[in-house]
Image (cartoon, rainbow, N blue to C red; front, side, top):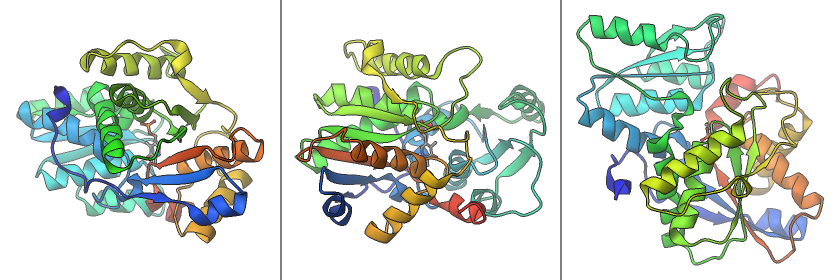
Length: 321
Ligand SMILES: *Cc1c(COP(=O)(O)O)cnc(C)c1O
């Protein structure tokens, strides 16, 4: 089974913790949190599980440098830079926009981790990657491209594997699994992993970025990716109805921090001493808190929030917070 073709980059299993204070305060449902902010690789996050599979393939192919792309404060890019440093591979990051005047949060960490940064300026996400590949090849190097957000079949396998970890760790029968969904790999992997182990929990992604890729709506991307994983693991295919995606919490757009995100971040910090991030988990938790408020859950439901990391970006958003 291809689930075994992975490197060990993360410190696993990540903790699974009850959020007792918050559950009591809200009067139910029973809230739990899976701490993938603690995957261990240079301040952690969900991309580490994906990189375990993608970089296994990179090493198999004899790659000596890794290329990926993302936003200035990309957690994905920071974890890719960290994994590359561990594996002694050169790392090239194509970051959106122009070099900012101050360097903090994930960007600071990218530099400390030794990544070479290329500024995309006004070019679209990832547009510059083919040129960079050619340039590195012309220098005699063997680049391996990690897709945006690490969301391809291999990346999603990281989250199918994570569900195996979850059921080994606990016999709690969660009724819902809620998390931030942005490039779709986490969502697709959790769906496939849940089907693999027979979990009946509702898998609910909170959408973070309202922009679709030019070629397909986001829900289709999640469905197609979940079906790639399903085919790989010999599972029954998914249908449109299996992809539950809330689009109610997109706020002012990607990485625009509003009251809902600010409140969710301070609620978790004050009640549970857990640090969410401004872009993804702050928004997803704002969605979960709103759903609780609206009576979406029963008091006896057991709801798992899957923390996907990102707290290093808090410092870069100090003013907005
Ligand atoms: C990338 C990221 C996500 C979204 O995961 P996808 O697999 O891209 O949907 C959620 N939270 C954090 C902190 C992230 O960095």
